[in-house]
Image (tube, rainbow, N blue to C red; front, side, top):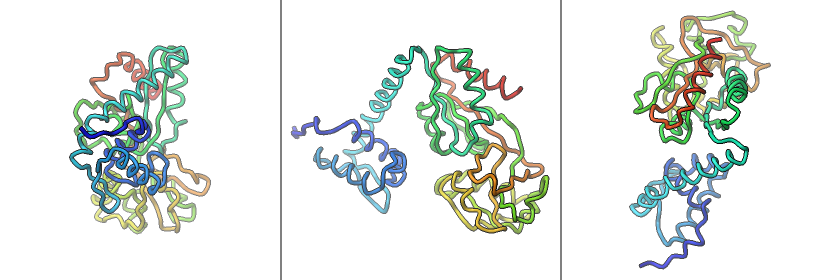
Amino acid sequence: MHNVDIRNISLGQIQYFVKAAEYGNITKAAEYFNLSQPTLSKKLKSMETQLDLQLFVRGSNQLQLTPAGYFLYEKWQDSVKKLEEEIQYAHVLQQGKTKSIVVAILDSFRPDSFLLPVMEAFSKRYPDISLRIESDAAQDIREMLIHGETDLVFSIYYDFAEKEMDQIEWCLLGRTSHCACMRKDHPLAGRASISMTELRRSDFVAISPQYLPEYTDMLKGLCLPFGFAPNITNYVSSANSLTLNLHTDRDVFICDKYYADLNRGEHALVPIENTKSGFVMAWRRDNPKGYLRDFIDQVLQIVEE
């Protein structure tokens, strides 16, 4: 038997390993932990040295598990998740509460538009239930829901519209039109509403298909029925970056009224006629928390009002 002193392996190292294995990408894993790529790489290599095991085969920014790495990932991923859940529940008990709901929201949403009123009303009605809110990109909160890391998510409609996911139930709320976000010197900025045809000559900023292919699929689905393909001149890695890349008076990107524009004073948000958007509330059908239904009903009541 190989002699390894596991006392030298920390829980933090195991968390780094599990998340790097999940992403298969060192940059994304480093972003998750707010670390630089070289720092995370060094931590993973240190762990391999301590265990005397090669856990990854490294490519150009990609990580592929070795057989030994895959074995440990399969064994450790549920243990890490369970430990994190137990610590979170200990915090719930410390607050004098007995139940908890974890909600994940798209990081580019305006929380004041619907989430904050829901939380305030629910907390008053159910003071024994702790609410914890996470915020991340669309693809990440979707994966959190699929893997049971969150009880309920609020995300963008196009990320759920064409998907079939086992055990996932969702409903469309806050129905609204798409909007074109543009600088105030864009020729269409002063309009009360526009058609998709009028965006034919605009340059589009879009979320890269590498990160969220559903966004470019949505964009093309809006343009193609009107006889043109979107002229995408700039790809970004996240919805939060869209607003930072309107560099000329031709640039636009597609969002809706729930988008949190960080430079709102400099931009115009113009509704697009005959389009459909909104936000989705989604949850797992097999969620064991019976009181989650109370939260869902509270959301439905407030949004309908």
